[in-house]
Length: 132
Image (cartoon, rainbow, N blue to C red; front, side, top):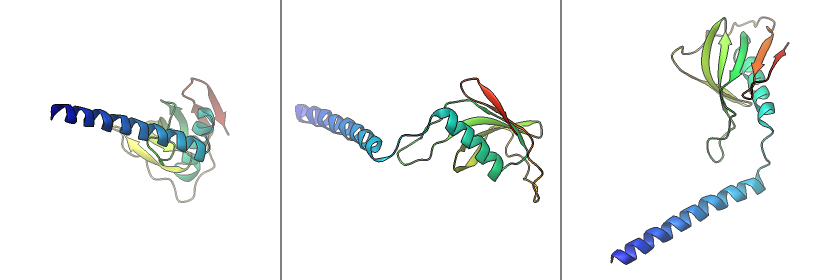
């Protein structure tokens, strides 16, 4: 009886690993690969500014970013500076922000957005740029 259970557990493990690996291989063939990390991070910072927080002064990425699960959108952890206060956010190039950390959410964006302030983007590789 023990031998049957052990063999069943091993077989189940092999099938599970094989199935998960096959999904990864199939996904790579079906879905196009993601753009480079730096492009994704730049697009995420601009989307966050354009759609949610026109007053953002700086976005500093703390990780490279990835897709957290099969079918999930690409996202990345960052620190966004709004009116001098830092907010921890999870953003993506086409997804709304998730705010984490002790500072909560930044103030609401004004109804009539002011002209954009220069946006400093610090990428996870340490390079940076200022977007006017």
